[in-house]
Image 1 (tube, helix red, strand yellow):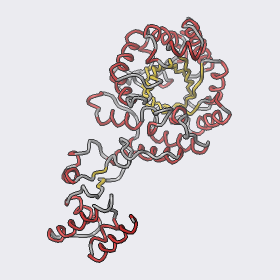
Image 2 (tube, rainbow, N blue to C red; image 1 turned 120 degrees about the vertical axis):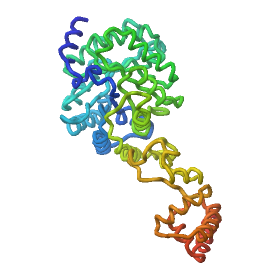
Image 3 (cartoon, helix red, strand yellow; image 1 turned 90 degrees about the vertical axis):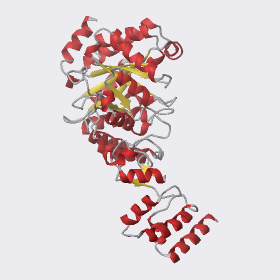
Image 4 (cartoon, one colour; image 1 turned 180 degrees about the vertical axis):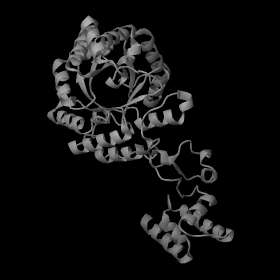
Amino acid sequence: MSAGREMRDAGCGTRDAGCGVGGDDDRVRIFDTTLRDGEQAPGCTMTLEEKLAVARQLARLRVDVIEAGYPAASDGDWTAVHQIAREVGGADGPTICGLARATERDIERCWTAVEPANSARIHIFLATSDIHMKHKLGMTRSQVVAAAAAAVSHARSLGAQVEFSAEDAARTDTEFLYEVLGVALECGAATLNVPDTVGYSTPDEYGALVAGVRANVPGIERATVSAHCHDDLGLAVANTLAAVRAGARQAECTINGIGERAGNAALEEIVMALHTRRQFFGVHTNIETLELGRASRLVSECIGVDVPPNKAIVGANAFAHEAGIHQDGVLKHRLTYEIMNAEMVGWDGVGLVLGKHSGRHALRAKTRALGYELSEEELALVFARFKELADRKKNLDERDIHALMTERSVEDRFSAIELESS
């Protein structure tokens, strides 16, 4: 262990080297794994050009770490990670990270891929739960501890920053988890990840797990504790936020929450929760929130998977209002029904969707925006025709509103709608 301690002390002298939380303990580092864990989702593979485009956008988003891929998986993955390290991992860019199993081959392959980056990280994972050790690894606890020590020491000897993940930590015996993480720390790991690999945990449990790690791993103050949560029970974001409350200072997440099975914690949701409720969480991120919408659209386009309209932060309906009471409130004061500013995440203006639930205030706002100034009597007549048309069509667009201005046009629109539906 003394050799591992010497390597740690030699290579981990500053926060910028990726070592611990340093003097900025109120900042949560955003570790984006869209290009690794996200791309592992069925049907979400990307070409080299698409990966580079996403990596450049992640840099504009100012994520702290880009996990660019799993270099040992294929020559194509190695090439993508290497290109991202060269083109995006400059002096002012994010840390570029690659994933590796706890084997010399994986670690060395990973290092050659990420080495061109100004700040390069090897992310070593090794399962620690009894079910994984028995059925997947065929290893004993002592063998896992020895493998973790050897892997982290080897990665540090190459000169890389090291993050160690205790795979399936949420289902691992806690005393054994503390032991493995402690060994990884002593051998030079600067980031210790406590993943809920299968999305099994609840916020109370996961927060307590992170708190336990911080209380029971000797020397933990030298490391950054990281949260990596999957969404199998729909709790990935909630679990990640619980981990932050418990002292985790790195959140691992993906754009749009893509990832294996039900996906990962969604980056945009974590970032905006921490931003919108900063007084509650007491922390911040370095994310440029104006780039969130663009990042979401780019990833969606690259993988060919639409963002659900009701998706928080980046869904088409996230800032849209159709109910008349809501529309009236938002028009009078946006905070009545909006807790965030749409423009802050890259969306434009107030989203008033005109449909059968809309009221007069929304219709007046829309007609004014299109250049029509109606008296109260005129508005009453148009609103009656609007309601009749809205009963026949889910949402009305600008052509419909223009058509409402003349009786003949309205009748033409009714006829067209009836023809479409027949």
